[in-house]
Length: 327
Image 1 (cartoon, rainbow, N blue to C red):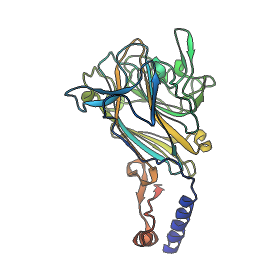
Image 2: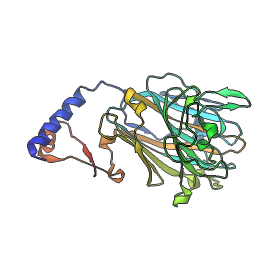
Image 3: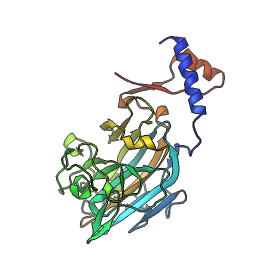
Image 4: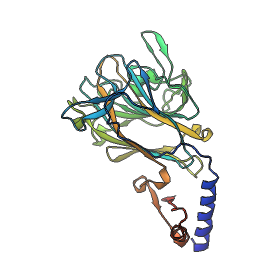
């Protein structure tokens, strides 16, 4: 590419950024290490209200507990501040599932930023994301749901019982029900009792040599696994959702079309227990706009390219993080 073309592209990018509407920053740093109830903009709900719990001598000692080891729970923690997705979003956190009998799991979710509902989905295998029922009482899924990354110790998040209406039962490979499956399952958009369908084959982390989510762990330090979710802006060519688990890329799928219709999103976590249980915990949440994130391991090169960008930086202009997807 010629220097003139790079310069023109850089100026066009600066102009487009300047014209972007102003929303809450996507740079979030939430250690989730202050004991007790979460403060605004966090909103919590469920059969238990998630809070930061101290376990003396553990590492870390403080973490956000979504459920404890009681049966039939759902816990929901929403960062109730809309985040612009004009530049994409890169989210990282650590999760731990421990101290119980190995169920059910945790969901990192993304919902429409304009949606104001703060109720979780169903208990048990729905992991507080999808619809279901509680002793015959129907429970709706998360309102305005766009994406659910299910960290599913037991395996029922990939079962048909966690589908809303309109899902095709054999569209993707499901993990077997039960048996400490240790699967990561992606579900898509939903509203009420409709949708929340699987959008990729369920991924067996243990079968691929990665750390188990549930394995009879007795501490959060033992159970800790880092998870990263990178969501491209819908406006680029071939936008993707890329998920990393335990340092390995496990999903690289097309961005669901439902993201085309939203300017902002809200992010959060939900969890569920059923007849089997665990402490479900999160800490170390960070986010960034994905063009500025170190995405080389996703097959995307990042960096400042060309003399035009260097000249803008030297003149006190915007430091551009230009990215291009490898062939």
